[in-house]
Length: 531
Image (cartoon, rainbow, N blue to C red; front, side):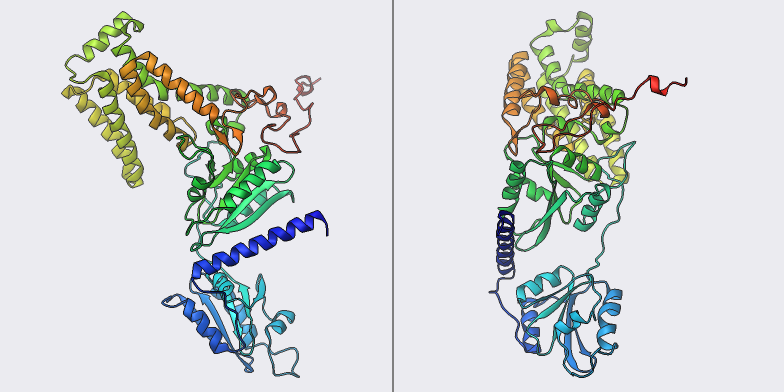
């Protein structure tokens, strides 16, 4: 036996053993086998499905020769296919061989009497229960100690729509849904290669959630892939309701405010990450796909950066970095300058600020904290309220409260401007979880600025940089390729190089296949001129 077959056999046995353990823990019963008595088999299933009113038990007679029983979940099976592919062939169709009055499950499969997508035989009670809960139809025949499982699942699911979170002006409009099969098909349609691999596993003793690990063979690093398999495979939980459940189990530093696992609801973002050597984790029941490893520069980039001209994208990327710094530092710099370092402010501007702050009872740091808390409360209220009134309440609330606070002398007008500009700048960060991290860190930096001035801001920035340099995502440095610096990989960090200039994949991510496109494809200016 070759090494590949040995490894494949071990992996298959491990998955089967893990699935049996999950099934036994899920249903709380020891492993049972069917017997040749139809009534006993029915009672065994009914015992596990006790008080489950949505389970349908349909007794039939197969060609008026043998008793049979169909078991399925109401609402999870395509009733039209159930009638056409199961009931009509079994009840109305004559048997190919009339010599025998016996009807067996093996014969039903051999004579292709059931035209389902997939069929299989099983003698395990727990496996039958699991597959019925997954939308399959179980068929029992009198005298058979096995059950025939037919795949006829067809439950309600959301249609493919435009992503609500990652919207773009130019680019694909399709987004992931809550169906695992739909999401994997969206990837297959765009990348028609057998090297696109999808490994499936089940997580959750109660939910039995299907999870798929997606990667491109030869592009993804074997060491990172093995680490992903190890971290996902060791998760033990009762239910997985969203990919966020998986994320908290596999991130490197759970106490860091910065995201170490990327999530996206766009197929094009996932595929572009796979082409760089990253690995995706698709969880059934959620439209957000996890992508690992994650670097800081990937979170700053938006999907639209790769659909517009590289000159526009580079300019917007610089603007994005500048606004990120403003959203993080502006309130602290204002507090430090007005409290400890007024010499840093021009005289005329300082007189305007002093006149505006006349009568304000709080120091600048308390004033800033009050306004930041109010702004965050309005932002959270706008998210949680119904969409028709959420944006209106947040905008009107900010205007009314800000104007009223200034008129009442609680806060100064310059502070309202600083906090408002900070909030607008934070909206330009493409990823919500990164913006949330800087929003949280803004408060301790404000306290440092209000107690130590510009030196406190310096201490806070140094501590933040040390933390960022120390972060890892599946072994990849969070600030790579800047720290550690990898000169050949800087074409898509501060700038976005032309497509024809990005010849190689990131070396810290890619596996054996590091070449992206051949060289020498730069457009020739002279070639486009008419002679």
